[in-house]
Length: 472
Image (cartoon, rainbow, N blue to C red):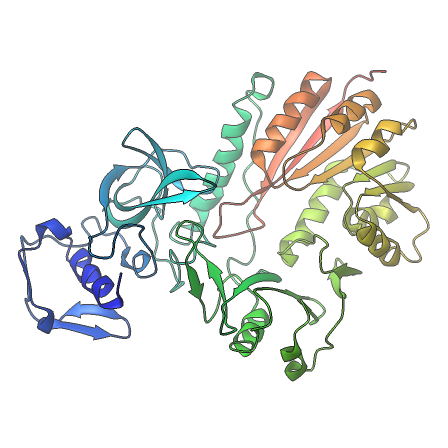
């Protein structure tokens, strides 16, 4: 669809109309400015109907970067939908459409909206999604999204949702996943811990680079590239660096920028010739990060929390939850760069950190230099725990992604540590694993979501379990 055609559609939608309702449109009465198109006179004739029918903030920005798979000479396909009271796993709302249920981006549960229907193929499957164009009945939790790219980028899903309601939605999503299992039914999910910074918190950016060397992001629905001047979730330093790289990063298609909030240090991968203009050493493979007074060296492929402020709160929460006395043997499974192992070393007798990545284990050893009560074991957690004979007093599971290997859960049931803290960014996988552990003899003491990623649907959850029986 041409830019002029998209602008015309924007005027039509802004008038509260569908394309089929337009009787006459005089393009000479339309101003095409930098901020979009607008009518200068009464060039659009139709039944009068205000665009914001229920006082909702404008949804028109969703339109300008959305690509339809329909032919360019056809207007976009629209549908009026009632959104369910629950959210989907991608943070989108859900609605009935045709013979099934579809994801709808840009809505809030319970709203009545007009959505643009996008039909596309993904992994050889026909897919249908909706993108909100107009709000018929608005939620009281709807706010104006501050980002000019919101809806075009899709990296943020909830900028249009008030922050208190974001926290409620995240808690509700954890509750709903727990309710799928009889063994977890009735589990009290505590309120979600809010983040101190709602924007400017991300210390790690992953950009897609266009042919001319400019960074941006790809819309997950339309797969369209969106060039951005800034991302409101990134630290200001990352935005400055990305802006300086415009037109200079042609040698790569993907770019990772890590920024140390407490160290003012950078790591750019892959190494670019353009880096030389910024006075940062090209070719480095690690960068320092500081948490709670400890310095960690992070390699490019290693996992490290993208929200430094909340990472410190998360580490403190794990320590408080374990109620350590100083005499414990603690196992830090899926240890990564050793964050929990190193931060808790002063509070326990001994820590065994298990990590599969050889590079991460080398980083762990360097990070723990001078700490004598931390042992690092390179290997898969399922193999190491399965062969472990000594009963740990406490276990930390910080498993990212699909959840724990079944052998890990079996080993935990056999070892029956007094306390186990499970940190998960996937409520569905967490509920599935906790169901196995509870049926194996563990008791859930607390479940506390913590918001590491404001403006998105992602939620971290910290669950404490107590081993009430030991099975051999």
